[in-house]
Image 1 (tube, rainbow, N blue to C red):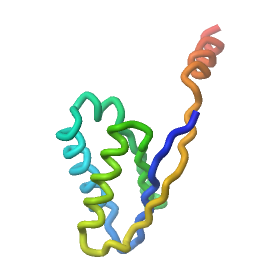
Image 2 (cartoon, rainbow, N blue to C red; image 1 turned 90 degrees about the vertical axis):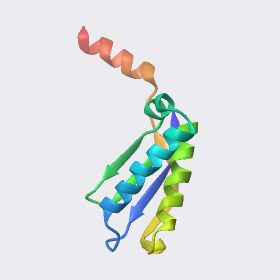
Image 3 (cartoon, rainbow, N blue to C red; image 1 turned 30 degrees about the vertical axis):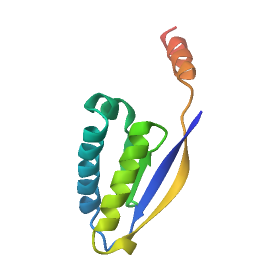
Length: 107
């Protein structure tokens, strides 16, 4: 099972904290657009500060909205060229495999 996501890679001349602040604003805007429940259930992201990468899931309505708003916020700041964004595929093992593995471990 896979899902669509966007991978944001930030150059050294852009403070990663600034990008994370923009993500928080984007989350707030997405919540206003959809609902708190939908964003909490469906919006997900991952940050790897060591390589200055932020991956935002886009396989749900909330994720798509979050990516659009986040991208708009990033490009509204001075220094637009300080990040690169690419569409990527996320791999997620099927939930049934996790349940099966859990059952084996308990035996």
